[in-house]
Each structure stands twice: as structure tokens, then as C-alpha cells.
Length: 349
Image (tube, rainbow, N blue to C red; front, side, top):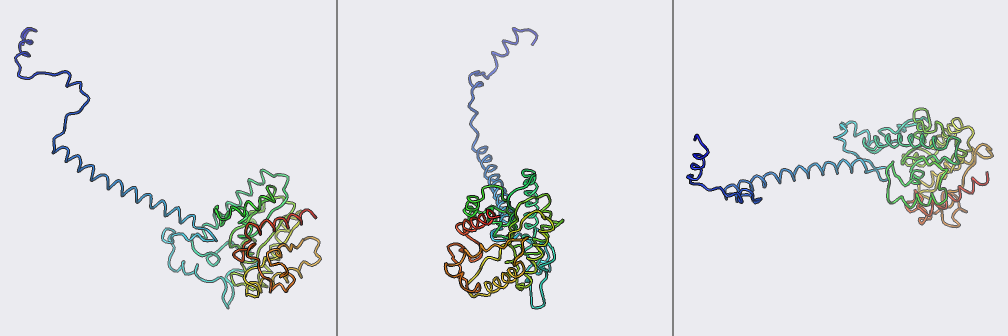
């Protein structure tokens, strides 16, 4: 094809015709039945694989989340396989704290929680996290209150519930308890408690290893500890000796603070084993600090018994379940009355 004329003649003689309108059309050409079937097979094969992968991932994340947050009432039973715990190790977590031969922990010797004072490896890990969280909270509090503050509260779950938490986790069922606490003490009060702690654990938390008291300058320190020692099977004498060591440590670490020591709150049924041992511990506490001007004994625990019952021997006190529904922890109304009793004590000092 040497000239433009020859080219035009060639194009006019070709057997096909170009439709420019069809070339510009946005509608794709219709696929053949074979092509449509092939595409459908690809889609139907890919969808189940993607869906199954999504379900597996979501389920795994949910399981991990639940295991990390199952801490209500000192729970926290994590997957022992994930933590690599042997059967021998798991058996030690099921061994009771105390037996006729003695107790694995000493109420007067500072120690963090061990295999024998938690229910599972996961709970031990959670306790360590909660304790570190308290130290971080304390450091923030010191930065906010460099010249001191009104009241520090130390203890176990009864104290921790004032924050609306159980074992470091926000619990919706404790929100009314936190609200009752805040209604009386909206600020200038720092509660530091961990569910299930005993005297030896609080001693460790207050010491150099735990570091919870470093830098704090409270005017008053309220302490309530020892009931879990009894629950673990320790004798009333052992629980009392632990309380005595706690008071000694507070005096050494916070010499300018005034201690308000709570006697153990009543628990269990009237005349039951627990209330019997509580009464014995409190009798020892009253005898030890009778007339002591460096410490003030609180009698606020009496508000949790039925009217007239506190005139009886302490072993026969009848709990008011409207104020202490589970016969161990004060409910919202019980906390309000306790805080009002404590506020009255502070105002008299």
C-alpha cells in the first residue's frame, strides 16, 4: 500500500464494519454461559474460606478477651495451656493455704500472692497486673497531691469495691458502691485494695518491693485487713499477728499519718465459725491498742448488724443483709453508712 488512495480502497473492501457507538458503550459484552459458571464457582469457593477465617479470628479474640477479664469476685481463671503450666504446677494452685500441719504463707511475713493464695495461674498473673496498676495510680496521685491529702484506705476487696472494681476490672454491679463512696468522699481520698488479699500480701504491697506507699503523704490512713486470713484457714491469733505487723509497717512508713484501724467486719451467720473467729480477732485488737494514743480504733463495723444485735456478744451478732447482702461485703447503702461513720471519726480528729 504505497499511497493514501490505495489505503482507502483497501479499507472499503474489507468485510467488517466498525461501529464507533458500540466501542464507546459502557455496558460490557455479555459473557458466555461457560464464563458465567466459571466465575460463580470462583466466588462460591472463596466466600466460605474468607467467612471461616473471619469466624476463627473473631472467636479467638473473644476467647482471649473473656479469659483476661474473668476476674469478678477474684476470678481470673486463664487458660493454663496458653500459659504453659504443667500438671504438677496446676496441682499446687489447688492445694489449700492451710492444713493441720500449718500454712504455706505466714501472716506476718511480707509476700506477694503465691500458688497457694490464688485459684489459678491466670489469677496470679492478674494480681501482679493489678498491683502494678495501683503503683501507677499512686504515682499519678502523688504528682497531683504533692503536699499531701486527707485519707488513704488500705485493704482487700471491701476497699477495692469502693473504686467500682474487682481484681482491677470495672464491674457494673459495683457501680452503685462506688457512687455511694463518692457521695461522701468525692475527692481527697485514695482507696487501694485488692480482692482476696491477706495481711502478708498487704505487707508486701506496702514495702519496698511493692512500693505502694512511696511518696504518699496522707493525713489519715484507714486500714481494714485480716478477714481473708480467716477465710484461708488461719487461726484468729495468726490473723491478729498479721494485723499487728501491718500497723507497725504503716507507722514506720508514714510516721506523720494518723491510723484509723477498722476492726474486722462481721461476716457469715450468727454463731457460725467465721463470726466466731472474727469476734476473737477483734477482741485481740481491742486489747492490743486499748488506750493507745497513736492509733484510733474504728467501731464502724457494728452498723452492719441488726438493731439491738450489737448489744449481744459479738459472736452472736446478726447481720443486716440489706446492708451486707453476701454476708461479707457491704452493699451500696452499707458503704454509705460506713463512709458517714468514717467521716465523723475524721471530723473529730
